[in-house]
Length: 195
Image 1: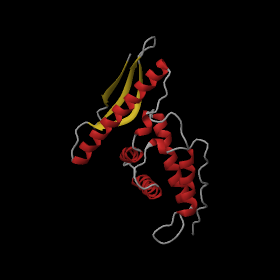
Image 2 (image 1 turned 180 degrees about the vertical axis):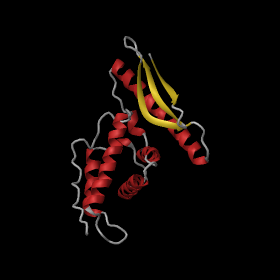
Image 3 (image 1 turned 90 degrees about the vertical axis):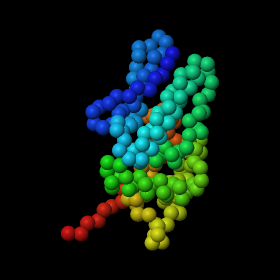
Image 4 (image 1 turned 120 degrees about the vertical axis):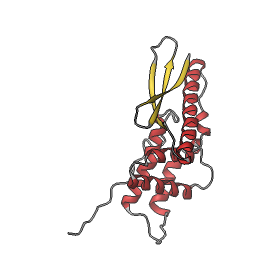
């Protein structure tokens, strides 16, 4: 039994990472991690990105190995709970850098999350109660620099980004269940335009 990290250069300047599963009694399978490396990093930021992505890819691989072994031996899987959620968000932010408007919303969501929960935030802390409390914070407590409450569209956008991060963690095998799954997001606010 083995799980191997494989890299595939698409010729676009990015090397995509996937997992290859060689499990007893099963055909060899591949699964995308959704992560990429810069094939020729040009600056310290890209080199740092590559180092952190390699660490995350190893963590994902370990997660899958533990899942396979736990199934085999009947243990409970709890390693993902010790991973740093803010560090994970930073990696997601790098993937969103193609769209500056979108990236700005992700950065704002992370900033408000850090204001809500100052200090270390591990995946084990992000349960359904935490998600509900963060939603309540966005809705009722958060005040902007101008001493205003968040607009309906801002609340909707930030909470949707937060939920998307949790969904991506499930897709990557870091979380086994999305704690925000049964929690509704905010409704879109009415956009008023003057003509």
